[in-house]
Length: 397
Image (cartoon, rainbow, N blue to C red; front, side, top):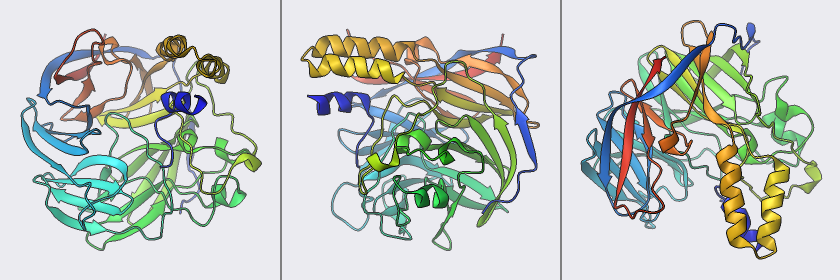
């Protein structure tokens, strides 16, 4: 019974920098007030449980992943399904267990990061390229959020892909070596078919305090634009800004992020970790995604569930009160602060904060074409055979 409750609380189981030139702290004295305003919406007619993973830079195409059927769906901006394909068979063009959800690449391609490597397909599902992992993985975990996918970066006029790094590096979170050698992302050169691991835990990181941490504690949120990489290591509320070059990331700026009620991951004794065991918890406080809309940087966060409340709900579940436990968990989840911090792109000045729209259940979102794209929370009392997506603009009140 305890194992079943853990599945309710978790998303999934098993599944060279230079010196910093500047440090900033979030300043809120002149914070502005923002809100999300619906500009348009679309309905995707599809029986299943599709999740929006990416929007093309011009906003003309959307890509979804449907977990039940393992189908990748590509629509236009009005929700018309133009392409769909699945790659779950034991074939040379199958990505294997999905580590990063599908993201657009070079306009008319889709990139998927899986246990079998990084795969690039055309919109019809024909494999264009496979880039293998630089080392054997063994096991790896996957985190699923709306709008979270393989990212891209343009450096010196050339396009690169940026997935998370899942290399084991001959260590695991119960050893100091894991934290010393950890790298958050891979910079992938599709032309050379190389992956370069980048972005360590910098000096002063919460995850270098001697405790042990699970993957959802430190899983990165990141975005790249104009030769810069913006990244937060999950539950450590610091925004790191790097000058990004092929095979090199130079740390430029660190900004301390201040969120009332944000629960820093406690960590645990490293002796409790077992090699080969991967754990991901859905209630962990973290920055889950970063978006750039026009001249704004948006840091999408989830403040986390208090461990004591999780333990209380788990105790109900293990005692056999499953319905009561579900109701308690839903109440706990609804009370978790969720929102977005807003920064000016040009000078990294703090502008304000915006909460998630109520009709989206506080969940994450995608971006593209100068808009944010939110999935509507399904109505539990009404059977729906479509998915509604809201196209929203961030406006100052």
